[in-house]
Length: 504
Image (spheres, rainbow, N blue to C red):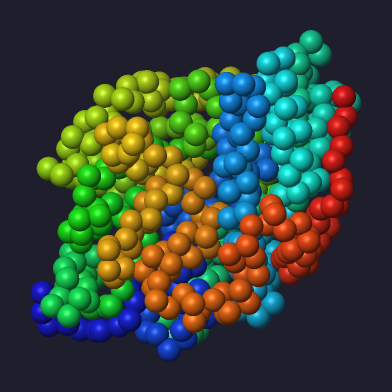
């Protein structure tokens, strides 16, 4: 490539929550750096970050049962829940810093306090939930959680779920009032508005066609605008944050770290309640247990959401399959992602995941009435006319060779970086957006290791618990809970250090 039109320090590909977070962190740490953003759609936060394309849970592991597993000896492993909770605390601290620094005007534009609940049916699941509650509340991160299997108490917590439910059915729930609903689409747009004010050049309707290394180690990108005109831009550092589109761009980079990696797209469908009287009866995010064979992203949940300053009620997600890697992608995305270097990896994944493939096909074939039957496990008297279907975003699960063998399907978020730190790509799905700050700090540690020591004081100003385990520092944990709740307008839900109650 030649005829470079612009040279910059950093290029961010994709205008989602990850690029928004990385751009904002770097602008605070090195304001003099020039940053350019290229996004193929016409606005920020239109794909995976969009409020209608993700669950907006603010994944803090307070209610997601798939983050806690029962071991063969009957004990509950909460290590993943601890890790995700601590990662979400980093996001909360960074957002608080932006609010306190007047870089975000009104936190209620993107975050609201909302109880997080886990709800299970059947004797075996009730016993599991009680054990999980006891394991979690022994840890200071989860103080304030309550457990109940008393129908009267549950009627207070979740009246919509308890109404018309057979009294003979064993049911239990945990509830913690420090949960949140986060509108990641709104937050993404707020952060890009801020970056624009800071002089970051944001180019919408620009697609990256190709990229290659220059002799000086920088990256040269071939970029096409919406009028078909090809531009060439160069940068010392490139971040590929294009959601499902990241895999193809990583492959175009040609870096060895991007080889032997594939992607498997999973789409989601939510049901949205159109009856305001029903919406008004529920005020929580209630997560259930995934069905056997279902991927972790398909854990059923009944969610209160705040979108466009209006309370909504969503149920889902139902998994689906489309070969597209983005909602606005191409039906050839999956086929064109198969390369000679990842063919065996992809074929191995196909052979290993026949049950998942069968499950996804079954989900695609579900009629609306079949989906209503699943909803009625949560809301026994749900009426079909009160609910509409909404297609959510595409998630591309990473497939890679691991110690467990070739073609292992990964359900988390993966950062792939070149050995010299000049390029990084973000792949994967949940908990994704909720842990964006943690993930972008990981990108910075891998790509700018020689600068981290100098940056550390500013990072600690923005994120006081950076480098500290909150589960081992209860005093700092309570300080951070109080300060973030205050800054983000969540004060009414600040936890009580010793509150741990059981109602049976």
